[in-house]
Length: 269
Image 1 (cartoon, rainbow, N blue to C red):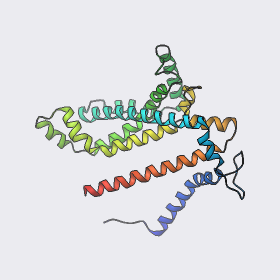
Image 2 (cartoon, rainbow, N blue to C red):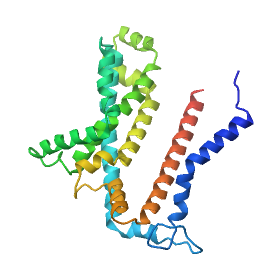
Image 3 (cartoon, rainbow, N blue to C red):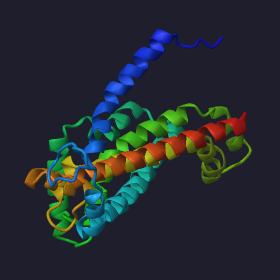
């Protein structure tokens, strides 16, 4: 029997949702202000700050760099998380809890501690190479991967917990090797968990600013760092415009993922 929430519960949920969304909604009219400072438009609405995003090459470079770093770090973090989670699920080691705690350590450690650790790590790498180093896109992608991998581990581990081990045992009993079992049995059953991990880690890398401030200077200026610089030096209304664009993109991606997931579940039924 499926119980539906009453009208009072639905109204309370709607009020909470509106309360949480108000800061995001408030930035929309600010992005259309004709002034050179953050303010609500008074009568006239202008697209000057949206045009500034297209005309200023710094915003374009920062956006492209953030996308590239987000894709690279998301793929790396999800791959590492998948390998770790599969190892725990298949081998069932004696100290699985300890290993899981170590894997989740970047999630619970203070961000400043993680940022300082990654800073000294990348500075050390700078002495032996110029690619994965301090203030490079590859170095930032590696640092982001360290920070976001625990979230992918959680999502993939939860997905693996819902897989029936008897299917894997039956395949192993019929002579299927490890790679065949992983490719043909395990991965198809956790594909939604993998996609969720890829999406979440990309979003986390995209918005990462705390660690990025420690490991970048002038070469690897991501979009969040550029926004932070604009707020620190002079409050540029273009930041409100880029915020509205990012909110719109996130909403579209979430809605598309939800529709696709419901369609896939409907096909399975």
